[in-house]
Every structure is written in structure tokens, then in C-alpha cells.
Image (cartoon, rainbow, N blue to C red; front, top):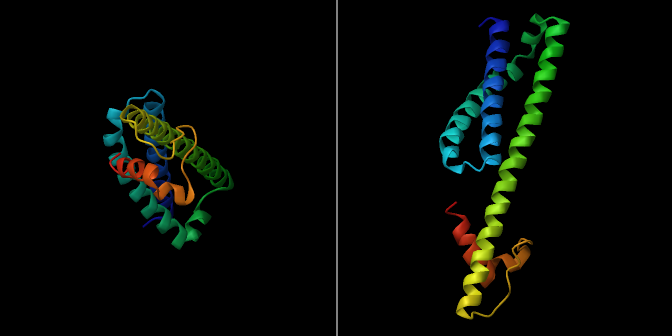
Length: 148
């Protein structure tokens, strides 16, 4: 394969993956969670393609010699933008997960109170950590979270 083609495929896969991650961030911010499943399937496909192209590039770094200094600089800038988008995507998904987790814990706490169940209180603003996560309060929440 032509060295420039290897770089071109890598750039295309990175660009497409960035676009999907940005779209996913927009959906999360707009709380349009129903549309995420299809986007995440597409993101997984693109991530696999990106990984394949990145592996080809890493195995043969000499293909970068076919690029001019300006093109290598542009590639560095694109990769930096990719890393930033990846970070933003992870933060958006993590915050959505944490928000859902807090809601679940509030529901569990409310149900416990309404049924008069005593035991460790679940603080919806503070995640249960350590061995407490495996106690009676943490088991219900952890079991429910696996279905998300």
C-alpha cells in the first residue's frame, strides 16, 4: 500500500470517529439518550477501524517520511484535537452515568424510607465505595446499574 494511503486512511478514520464522538456529546448534553444506542454502535465500528489504521501506521512509521513537515504538523494538530474530543466524550458519558447513578440511589433511598427499611442510608450525592459498596445498600444499586 502506498505510504500516503496508509496516512490518509488513518486520518479519515480519526476524523470520522471524532465526528461521531462530538455528535454523541451533543446527544448527551441534550439528554436525547434514546438516540445513543445507534451512535454508540457506529462509534464502536469506527473505533475498531481507527485501531486497525493506527496499528498499521505504528508498525511502519516510515510512511510518515512521505509527508512534508507541514503535513506532519497538521497530523499532530489533528491528533491533539482527536485526544481532546476523546477526553470531552469520556467526561460527558461519565457525568451522564454519574447523574443516572445518583437518581437510582435517590429512588432506592425513597423506597426504603417509604417501606420503613432501616440500614445504612444511601447518600445520592456521594458514591458508595470500598466494602460498603457490597453491603445491603450497595447490592441493590449495583445490581440495578448492570442493566443500564
